[in-house]
Length: 125
Image (tube, rainbow, N blue to C red):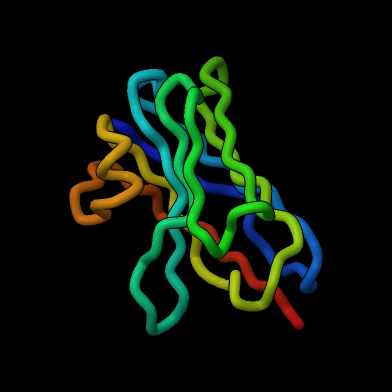
């Protein structure tokens, strides 16, 4: 079992930055692919970014590429999402996820095994 707890959300003005953290417990993250997803009111949960176990590869949604950066610290069992140049359309609950399969994280949201409860990010215009 892997337990994931997100933190770092909040209210920020458009153009601002936030850094989200996802702390894992239960098992080391070194053998899991990790990802960030978001869900806005009335919309489906969508992929934001992913990192392979070992941090060798990263993947981003087109809407976040160039603005968001995912990174991991295996020693702290924590994954981060640095969000810059935030836009009102980035407003959502952001969820951390873990799965042995990077393919599941990036392409098959229904197969992702572990989820955090989420942290709210609100970007004002």
